Image (cartoon, rainbow, N blue to C red):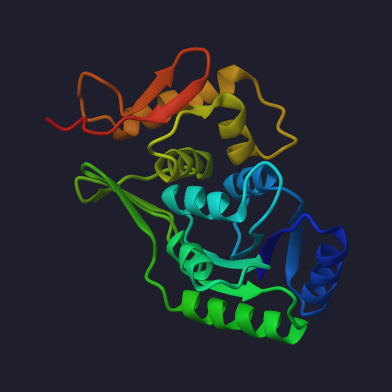
Length: 226
């Protein structure tokens, strides 16, 4: 499984990474909430392990933002808070489980296994905007119930826009999501890709589904069906 660990306690983070890798998980580690957000937008994770109190953004804020953006993987919250109200707040923010510090590594692994078992039974994530349907796991895109053939990069562009349908995405964010951190593509490459996708998903409406936000990037425009 691919796991993101966000924990600002360097010693605890090192120990958790060691245990997870010993269990043959692939682990990416960060030490603040903003890096957790950024990493999740460009990588696909089966599970996030979030410390409640982190620099820049708290675990609660990270959890809420990612759930609102459509993240469907597992989320396990780590914290020293053991008050019932705090536990409820953590779960209501979108976390699947809650582990109070200090804890034994055996319990951590058991909680992870339980979350992953539950997620394996989840129904595939489907995002709908008006008459458009995007099936995230099966990589299928439908317009008016008709499947639209997309290249890999075309699907990734739509996937990123759909997962962040209420947000303006910068050109850099989109390029990293499609081509990776080491991308060497020009602005024209992204513009050309957007033009190709527009031809496939716009049904002749006056305004394109993909809105150009001058000087920033793009966003998905909804309510285009008259």
